[in-house]
Image (cartoon, rainbow, N blue to C red):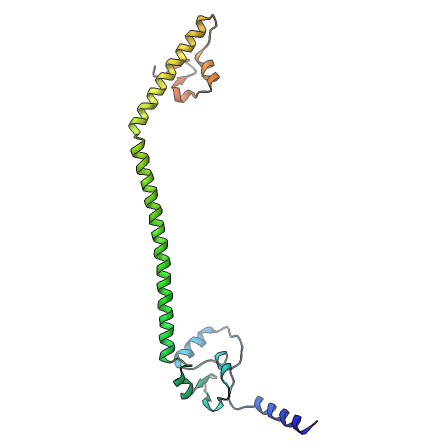
Length: 191
C-alpha cells in the first residue's frame, strides 16, 4: 500500500474510535424519551438534525444519560430549542388551530344552510298544500268517482248487460280503499 493510503486508513479508524457520540440515523420505538429529552435542551442520539453539523466536535459533550447535548454556540444560533424556534412553532400551531377552526366553522355553516333550505321547502309545501284543502279535494274526488261508477253501472244495465261495481272497479284499475268500496257488500261504505 502507498503511504497516503495507509495514512487515510489510519485516520478513518481513529474517527470510529472517537470519544464523543455522533448522532446516528436510527429509528427508536420509544418516542417518549425523545420528547422528554427535547424539553431538557438535549437531542437524543437518533436525531437527524445533527447530521447537518460539520466540524463541531468541540461543541459536543457526552452526557451521562447517553444523549448528546450542544453547547453555547448551537444554543445561541437557535438549533436547540431557542426562543425563535418556539415562537415559530407557536405561530405554526396557532395557524394550524385557526385553519382547523375555520374548516369546522365552514362545515357548520354548510350544515345550517342545508337545514334552512329544507325548512324553507317544508314551509313552502305546507303553505302551498294546506292539509284541510287536500282532504276536502280527496273527499270531492271520491264522491265524484263513486257517482261516475254508479252512472256507468246504470248505463250498462240499460243495454241489457248486468255489470257489477266490482267489475267496473277492476276494469279501471281503481283501489277499493281509496273509493271506500266493500267487495263483500258490493257497495260503497260511506255512500
